[in-house]
Length: 515
Image 1: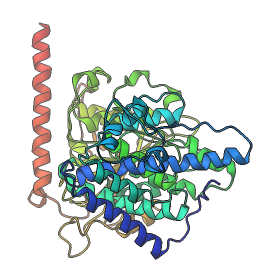
Image 2: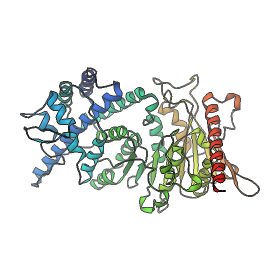
Image 3: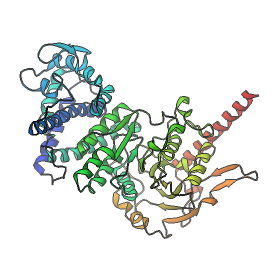
């Protein structure tokens, strides 16, 4: 029968057993010379778990069909089902197993020749789940060089019961810890992980409601979608509510194959049965072609920043707002994707500090944000929230489509007393958002909160041409001059100015070319 979605209390025995399985798998994988640290081991463990998870879900569907007297048609057909090559008479190991998984054509379980496993999965077409499988395995490569070690890992994963709600719940938390470890190993490449405390805060104050459609267009490993799912799950009161949550509530987008795979597994483990994540760059569509039917109620995201998009992507945006800066392109996409009616859409977005004070294209985008949207809150995070992976200061923008911006509230969260910075072992804690959460619905200026009129940040010259839109407003309740700015803030300010100079030079070059 389908597992009960209610999360039970985990037992120490279950946690210990699953931790032991995962530890044993990692110990086995360390022996394979083809796997390079956690950056390889977690993806390999993920696709193996993914196939076992899917087979267990197929088993539940098969039992349901039998009880209802209906025919059952597996999404993955024999001899490609997990059980066909891991259990029983035709189970495989060694070079035979590697060839079956890796090769376009191979000897299959039972001795017949045909497509190899990955080739078969990548070629699946049809309903939503077949398409998801095809997209997931499009970017997966099996890096095991020993089929015997791979078989040992498969045997360990076979002991996980994905039909058990208790084991799913325990494993979901264990998997999140593995994602954090992978971020640690990735260093600067760990941009697809947003601190759980930041994610939880944004979801809490945005407060998604069942029936609303929520999107993360740069979902990485799925942190925002997982937190939103858990938040919405508490509102489920009926079978229809559950259907809405499972099928109509959460959307994602991810351009990179590895985080796409990790997000699928992360969401599956947390209870979303068929994650709806678009595999591709969310910026690839023309902004002008996004219509009302494409819009959503809520967008929560931490888009990549510091990257540069190619000219083909930039061409999807208005001529006066084209830029190579990824964060600015995503900000425009988010603005375009928010619903107008019947209830104004709302967003919570992580942005680098440079977005607040940058001029040129950035100023024109911010002008639109203030005139066409209600940028009601900017939460200024302490330095080092994303440390040690990046030291760039970050902010949280909260806006909606209710009306143009009149006042912008700022709330500055500072480092706890006596603390100089966050570290990998001592990250920001959720409790540090407590005062901001308490202030959120009862806004009064205080030592951490202040209000600025939108008209005071929109600067025009005598010809009514836009000069600047500086949202980098310091807390008036504390002294914060240049001497007290962090080295990271100073570097970012210099880089933003250099970027603006490059934009001006490009504009001049184009003007000269037209003469």
